[in-house]
Length: 220
Image (cartoon, rainbow, N blue to C red; front, side, top):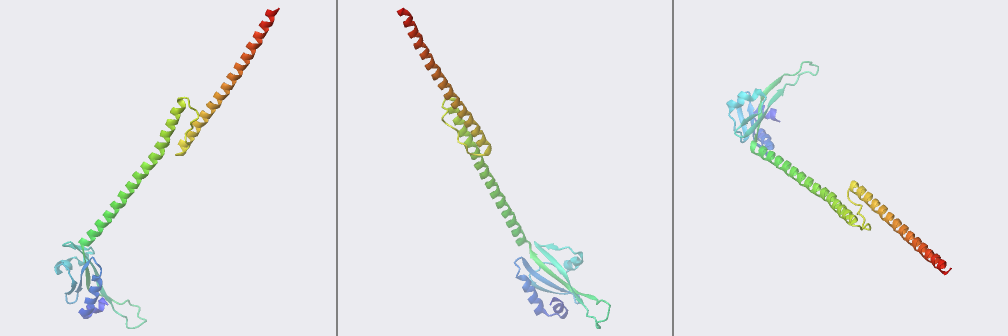
């Protein structure tokens, strides 16, 4: 592990640990700092000076140098108590630090990719909303235009043409009401024409009877 490798100065283990972290695409380098002899061991590329690193290690804030972010964590060693019944906690000794460098370019690329993805989703959402609005607008405008044409035909005197009862619920109700009105007017016209025909026939019968009565009176 890192504690043993740093304490013993085993560069082979430190190098293996460093290269295992370098498998992450955004990681550019790993630095191991030995607090005892103030030595450093670098795997990959770390663009940070020892002076700046030592000055900022205790701040707890990641460093940003030359488009690279540097995150660090302490490497500590806990002593093992000699006796199991020893109630004293083993002392924690600081062995050094491990610093991991990440390139800002990949982070910016991932950020741009996320922004681009959000823009694509937003654009598609707007296009779908516009398409739905057009479809909804056509689904309303077409029944209204058809209803207007039917009303104009009814105004011209043709009550046999009925409005198509399709489209949104409100349009269907309006078309149904217009159709019922047209049917009522048409039935009223039929009844009125029937009454006129009956009255005309009755008038003709009355005239014939009157003529016959007058002819009979002339004979006397």
